[in-house]
Image (cartoon, rainbow, N blue to C red):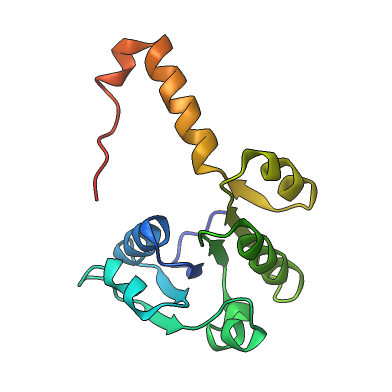
Length: 150
């Protein structure tokens, strides 16, 4: 799904990954709503973040309705809990008919289960393993790797 105009994106979870995704999407001109259970989680959002913050539990339909998930082009579930991410992803896809749904999953074994359920997943642990293996097998590429920025 590629749209030239701004997207409406709901990011569930405002930890290290969720806040960076939300900041970048907002900075790129997209409309972003971030949901997190903890108010202090929003401290990871930059002063330039132009989106909305909702303090609440994304496993509750009322919170997802408050985020206007039914209008979203994209839903990204990035909480620390695989089961929450799966549930939010399934609800976004099946109940709210969000066209693009992505879920973070930490346990590589669960990645296959999510994919069988039709959920597109990002597994940071698998990505890290592949990056380390690539660095060992192709050391010259390591010097050209993108730095880890906050």
